[in-house]
Length: 212
Image 1 (cartoon, one colour):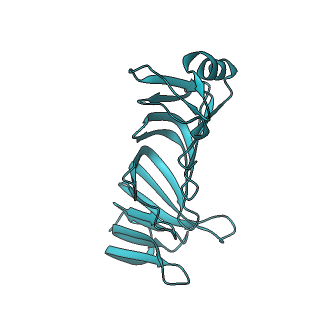
Image 2: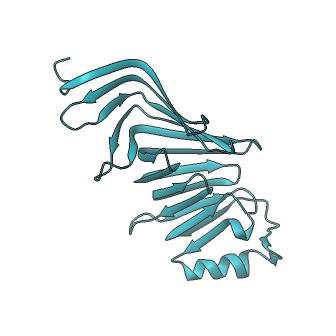
Image 3: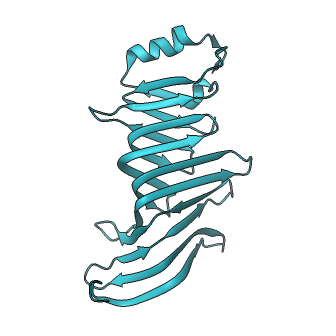
């Protein structure tokens, strides 16, 4: 193609699988087109889809986008995958719990099961929806860090009560007082609410933990 960058190989409808030293499947990358660029060493992807898991088969993440590329960090030691343009991700674990994510750009480190973005991001799960201006996701640990800007704060709508050990808020002392002292009665190690309607939370930053 005239507008394509110089390349030394390309593949159509390819499927790249990665295994650990014991032969255990770890992640799988498919795309309608792979185009390796000679000058940069990057591989451009058209309609990529990446599936991630861990050694314990605790979860499966399926990440899709219209465009992407495979590259390395500055010292060439770590492979990373960048997705952009209508990025979506969905997770289903063995208990049937789900998490879905949408954003416009996402950087993925498959060997670490780590995701990050500085773009606006929306995350939905059985508890509610969180929106923020940036995310760091540690998939093996089930930890998600959300960030804000001067214009946009982290916002969460809870559809039901969450244990206190699963969410922590920083940068908003007034909200902490309202959350733990007024809005909810504190009962043991969890928070309970007798309100049937959804609850909206706003903060400068937040950490959500899937595991206790």
